[in-house]
Image (cartoon, rainbow, N blue to C red; front, side, top):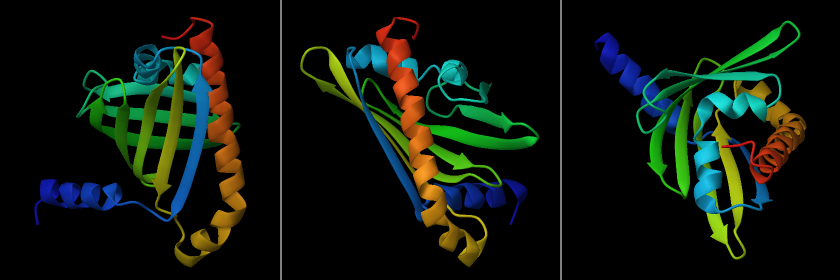
Length: 166
């Protein structure tokens, strides 16, 4: 097997849903097109995801682009590598996290509602590291993951509603 075919097989494995599933939802008082545009502005995600810097590694942010998010709290650093696999404006963005620690598919969906409101759903299906130990730890880690995603989306909503994003 060549290096490129090994990388493709590894990416296909990362794209399978993992057992660590987390979802956060928010209603944003803004039209779906504007909300979607703000979600797709990868390099500004650090404005609403705490302790995180995001950069485009390759591409324009659309399908096929590679994105890197680095979250740092004190000396702890978590590097999240992802590829954008689908962009369906103004409804859906799909990614695959393919790094060493964070692996699995994710989706951000925008559903237009009446009165220029948009429901945003952020859903991740992570592969849990550590085998059985990771699966046993997930019920303890899940609540903090859900709280973190929800808080990030609340901040996102405030920034979009205030006109700061996009």
